[in-house]
Amino acid sequence: MPDALTTTPESDPTLLYRYRDAMYAADMLIVGLHIDLFTRLASQPSTLEAICATFDIAPRPADVMLTLFSAMSLVERTGDRYETTRTAREHLVKGSPWYLGPYYPRLEDRPVAGDLLKVLRTGKPANWGTHQATQDWHKAMEREDFAAFFTAAMDCRGIYLSQSVARAVDLRRHRHLLDIAGGSGIYACALAAHYPDLRATVLEKSPVDRIAAAAIAKRGFSDRVSVVASDMLAAPLPDVADVHLFSNVLHDWDVPVVTDLLNKSFAALPSGGLVVIHDAFLDATKTGPLHVAEYSVLLMHASEGRCYSTAEMEEYLNAAGFVEARYREGATARGIMTARKAGG
Image (cartoon, rainbow, N blue to C red; front, side, top):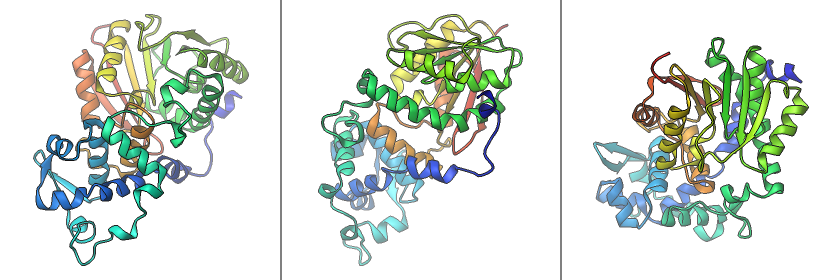
C-alpha cells in the first residue's frame, strides 16, 4: 500500500480532473445570459460593487462569476471596472445580429443554473448536487453516510495529487506535520511515505475522524500517522507540529474564515514553522487559468468559498504574520503555496 503513494501513473489524468471540475461553468454562462449581464456591461462598464447593486447579487459569487467570464475572455477589467470583450459584444449582447442567447437552454431547464442564481442572490451555498432534501456540504458532512461518500471521493483524487505536494516541498528537516481537515489522511500518509522520518497528525471532526483512522490503518501508516478529533473553526489548532498542511481546505471558506484559520496556524506553529497550502489557485490578476475559474464555480455552488488568487493568498499569509510566501506549480492545475513563521 505505501508504494501506491510513491509511484505515479504513466498517463496524465488532467483532462479527467477538468471534466469534473468544470461541470457547472457552462451553467454560470446561462445565468449570465439570464440576468443579461453582458448587455448591461456593454452599455455601462461597472465595478464589482455596482454590478452587485444592479443585479442584487452577493459579492463572493459575483466575484466567481466575473472571474470565470474574464478567464473565458468575455469580460475584461480596466482599473476596477468590468466591460465586455468584442466576443461578448458580438455574440452575447441583445441587439447584435449574431446574438446567441436563444441558443442556450433556459434557466428553468437547468437545475444547476437555477441553483447558481440562488447562490448569487443569497451568497449562501446550494444544497448538495441540487437535491432539495440534502443539506449544504458542510452540514451534510456531519452525517455518517455522506461523510463516507465525500471522503472517499477526495481520497481517490488525493492519491495522485498528494505526490505533487511531496515533490514540491522539502520536509527533511521537519519532524511533525498537522494535516488540518485532512479527510481520509491521504496527504498525511503520502508525505509520510516520501519522508520516512516525518510523523503526522490528521485533524478532523466526527465522524470523519473515524473514517480517517480506518483509512490510515488500511494503508499501513497507523504507526506514524495519528488522528485527533477537533473542529478547526471552533477551537485553536494543537501545537504539536512544525508543519501545517491545508490541502483543498481554504477554498471551501470565505475570506474571514480563511484569515482566521491562517491566524490560528501562525499561533500554533513554532518559530521557523512552515505552512503549506495546496489548492487550485487563480493567477495574480484573476484572469485565469480557465480550469481554475471553472472549478471556482463548483466551489461557489457547494461551499462558502471560492478559488483564491496567488496574490490574495500571499496577502492573507502576510497579514497573519508569515514571511517568505512562495508559489509552486502542482498537478492538474493545482499549486502549492508555502510560507514560514519567522525565527527558528
